[in-house]
Length: 404
Ligand code: SF4
Image 1 (cartoon, rainbow, N blue to C red):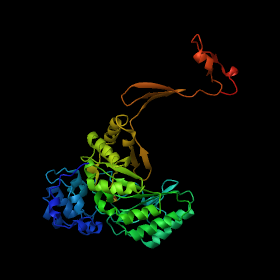
Image 2 (image 1 turned 120 degrees about the vertical axis):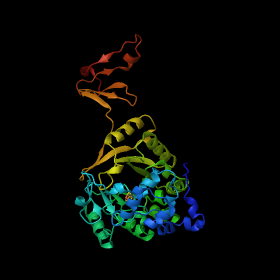
Image 3 (image 1 turned 30 degrees about the vertical axis):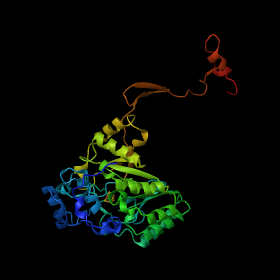
Image 4 (image 1 turned 90 degrees about the vertical axis):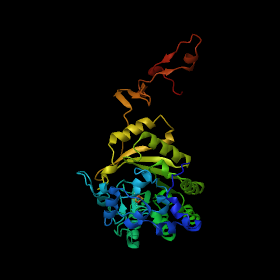
């Protein structure tokens, strides 16, 4: 288990354990202002600008837990870079988009996104415990978009109920675990009562940014509406602390399946060694990595974007070189709303009638012969294979026996 370099943690030494372990205390004591952050951390010039200007844009909010993981000696600390705004957020590139995944145009009722035939995304809050600087939904999160009124929830349930093809609902936001337990219970109860809803997922980063949110009460609610799958969001092995493992263990031990999505981020996890270590650490805490996302062209986050070739290269070095469970699917969310497109190294060298020429992870070439067409079938008799002379007896299609 990775233990963070933790020079800031001493700051909270006097906080009683019961407070530190209370997620409400963590949320209440988030650092959200320039003065508050400057008091505990020496800021770099780019951060000075970013933090001062973040008001009115994507908010800054950092839990004491997350701050305690920052390595103050490293300006490039991945924990720091995901949490503290920098001046680069105000550089807008030519291809930046307000709503890069085109969610708003696929929203039949406020707070509901319906793009794929059998599944919907239900946005239940704009709030998050921490505002990730690479957030693709930054047009909404931290804002007062008010997508999430009880009236809108009712409209969303009605839409799902009346569209029988919808069998999968992903509850997201913002972070759904920012809602009080009672509200979550109510949402899950309503969704479970819809006959066509088979599969409920809950997308959250709170087990990573404030793992104290995973409480016995919350687990009882999730179990009550089982199966509820939980999709986490990890970007760096340093996020998998002992405390985070405890939260993951509580969920897994309660029978709640965990998966993880990772965003490929420049300077944070765009090296093979970091990404591979992250995937291995996730398996150790029983979290199945399932997507690596190419960073979306959301406005103000182009400093986090890498070329797609970087992602393909990482996948090339992982597939076949480590456990299949540690190899997620690398996807590009098509800008403008085309959905997720898997992107992978090319393993098909050529294709001809009846055969494929393929390469394996080590670059060796193989031919795979496809099943032959009806009429071209030949059958080798058992006796022929085992014959005394060692010669194969081949029966043609005309002499093929009725049954094998
Ligand atoms: S937790 Fe998710 S929705 Fe919230 S800021 Fe981070 S990436 Fe965005």
